[in-house]
Length: 452
Image 1 (spheres, rainbow, N blue to C red):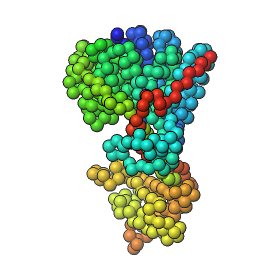
Image 2 (image 1 turned 60 degrees about the vertical axis):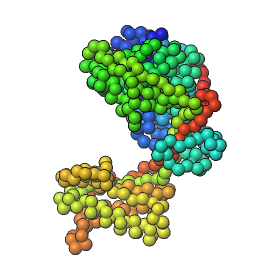
Image 3 (image 1 turned 45 degrees about the vertical axis):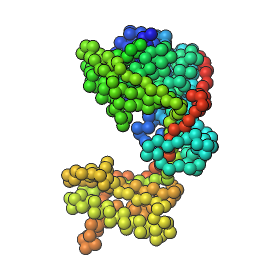
Image 4 (image 1 turned 30 degrees about the vertical axis):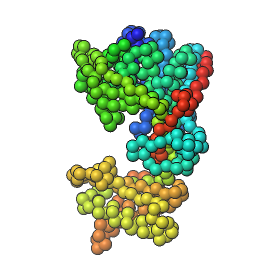
């Protein structure tokens, strides 16, 4: 049975082409699916349980999709709601859904799939041997789980299917794999399993699998043998090479993709251009696993930060910024250890040179000299008060420190006053592990409600 999935964009909050969306609705999709987030922007969003996207923008885009869903008479599903998929972010998305329904005058049945985990339960599961590391996983112990501010399990197609089976108009899912929200309905309808997972992987980021990748809207058709990708915006064309290339996106192996319950193997997949816009793919294979596991993501507080920014414009200091910064870090660290009695490992001072090595640090290979250089001091310590105290010790160095002791004392520019700015808590990822489940729903909770 052919199943058509309409994907408006790579993520809610990135906008979508309304003309292309209208074309998608005219093709009578069976479901509308859109991703809500990822870990791309670092651990803070999961650590805090918040979205990186503007609420106002999210409301406008989501309200447009809820209106489209009502016209099409099909379910609308979002995965990894609120960027991180934690329960607090799901509640944020649920609140937006209520507001959009009120604005549209809609009565909506909503299924909410929750993916947050209780820290103590995860510590117990680790002690029982039900949590095992993936490659390059950090060393963990019970405290790693107990001190995490948020832990989520990544739902797969089985959990999303359970939400679809409720008959909900709108499905708000916590953390899911990017593919699960697309693959679920084709799998439920008996489409080719390899094609369901492969087409979901290709379609996860909308038109990123096509030319004009920022255009967003695509349709993926699934059937008993394969799938077909059709981008819908003007100037967007799927080609065999653009479709296959997406297997490289966020995936270390372009032929194998691991998901809950098994893995996708596209070694024998065949990519055929049906015309200048569409690509047909067959030959993908789904390989079930003996154990059902879901990936865990966790984040926790790594410390507290203050930042301070100075600008160097004198050509000698711009040219000698690396030496100048290294000397400041050495001197300031010694002062902190002496005056605050701190051990060297209990705090961190770094100066990033904006315009020279701010992006790559010691890995930088280009050293073209700019007109001016921003020196951004970053202080990390165990408390916000300590981070601010160390930043105040760093302040006079960034304002007046000379390249050599023999020359006159320079004065640089602070763009802000006060120069020290508190960033508050900074977060780190704690887990790269999988959790073994006896039943796919064991780590997840499904709620159904109506909003009028």
